[in-house]
Length: 274
Ligand code: SF4
Image (cartoon, rainbow, N blue to C red; front, side):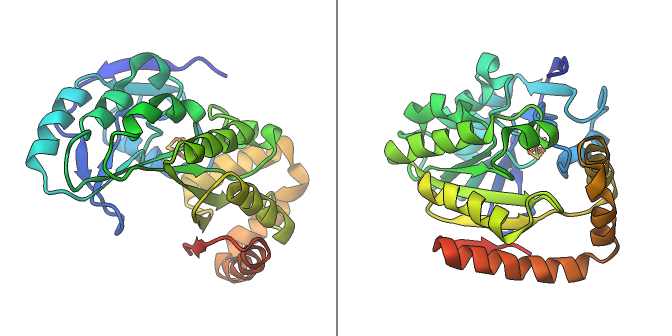
């Protein structure tokens, strides 16, 4: 993995009101994400603070996050809290800083907060002892493909898919509620009925109580990064991907049908988010 520029920053608040309907508060202990997924929508965050490089090449560590969140938990109305909406709270730097762990600990003993983590890292298993002390914790694992080589191309800094599935299994065995986020389905790469079925089946086997399935949003920035990855590794798919970008509505309709078939074959509880 390329060298990542890690630096310290301060935050005034950590429990941010979320624009996502099912989440009251988003908690992002880092600015930036060294997982560097080519389809990442969170790259827009680079507009709010001066980003010192390409998305994936830097991480701002919110060093005072544990103190800030400890105060906020006492002041805020209880609700649903999700760690990792515009960064991954368990990206590699967390192994050393333990900032996300300290932020999770702030919710131990706090009543009425449903605390969840959404991650592409098996590092979250390290904090099972904290999760076990929360009121109703859950951990979602985001998986877009099963192939380690493909994952390296599209999510270069994240844990391998098999490591994520193993982590999911381990947490489920420890009694933590786990779920899967199959998103985004990668256009031309993991969007066949069989590929969708394989991912859903592995999540089901790993103990996911439910799976959310989403398509890739072809905003200009993620599209251009995704297209570059295709050009490098799968040049023969670029034309098909361009056709999808030209008529996303028709593609989504077809994709919904494929997902529906795969969901029925696996028999997993699933929600299609598009
Ligand atoms: S893990 Fe999430 S936030 Fe991090 S780069 Fe990937 S999509 Fe973006």
